[in-house]
Image 1 (cartoon, rainbow, N blue to C red):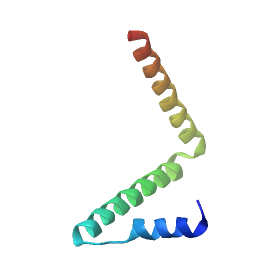
Image 2: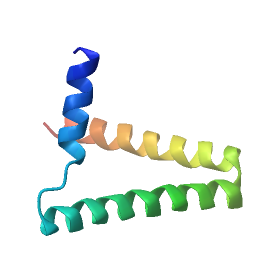
Image 3: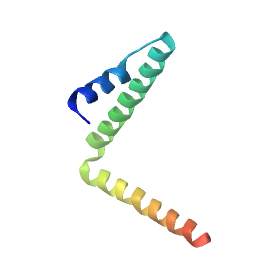
Image 4: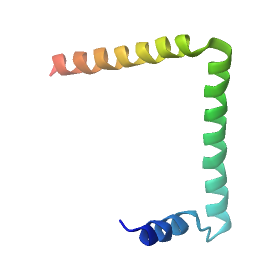
Amino acid sequence: MTSSKFVKNLIEMVTVRSFAEAVEKSAYLAAILIGVGFCWLLYILMGPLVIALLLGSFVFLMVFKIGFLWFLK
């Protein structure tokens, strides 16, 4: 994809055509900011080691669940 085509697509994505679309994009932006803020708060309160253990446990549970579902087939 060329640079000008990328910029054109980016401008097309952020263009607001109606009030409903503005409200929808604002809601998505607010959800992203709340999620990033929550992740930052967890990082500040617990530290990087605990975050790594938490993410590792989520990955382990995901792999275990996929393996269990694969076993059921």
